Image 1 (cartoon, rainbow, N blue to C red):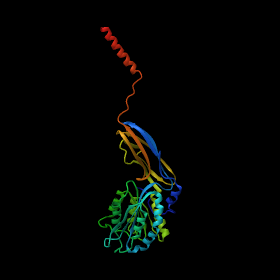
Image 2: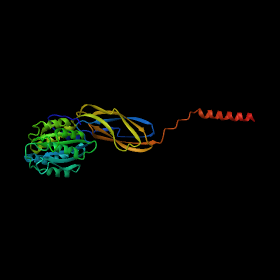
Image 3: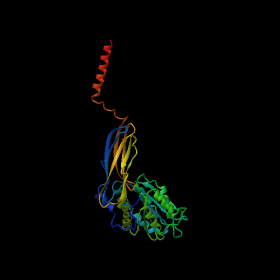
Image 4: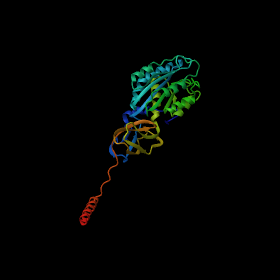
Length: 349
């Protein structure tokens, strides 16, 4: 997923405004029904509108990953105090789930721990964030790379969700960490189409590691800051940056299209787009009857691989090609032939 990269510098979280001001991303028409014969096709046009400001109907998975070593006590307390506002604001993006993890170093009581897998239960998420505690750490580098690898491969990311990791800490990671190198961590994140936003609480990028990871995943690198208000803004701005620009708009067929084949022209719209205005993307969608019976299914609109809108289609497919119409002159011709045969039989007598 390629998103805006570079140093974070947003004045305010746009999606907090978009939830109340912008219309949701959408597909038009919102549904379509038809009857086809096997082998028969119909083509209609569907228009995906990507709205200005930010999504309000997206499927979004967000993981908060914290450095839980001894020097992070103040920052953890700030994020804990900001969590309620952050969860409320991000819920406006649509169907949102959150996960929580933490890491220390290989010499500590734990190297990485998952405190909650992705869930829509904000009470459970708040409890997981509240359980972060600052202790240990040993030497300066920590287990960052191992933690990012575990988040990528261990969380139950939903299919076609927009996947975000908000990572904050004050020191770079050992390379390798528990056998995980920087390249390994980046590959694991890219393999799951995850955008990483790193928030520096000290010297997180002192080796360039955070820059490499955020650049590779299309994320951002910024400062966490201090105080509940500053931390809230930094985290929300980072998440908002995920949606500020995009490069691919496409359609995908959901489960249940058992009686038809579905194809799209074009397969996707590609370019460099921003959410400063509403943008429309049109697709010719062709449905071809393949199997007798009825079926209902969804078609999803995806922005950079994440679902932002859904519409529904249903079809009845009849069990073979339509009969060839009988020409109007054929009955007359048959009648003449039959009559001529009777005349010949009478003459033979």
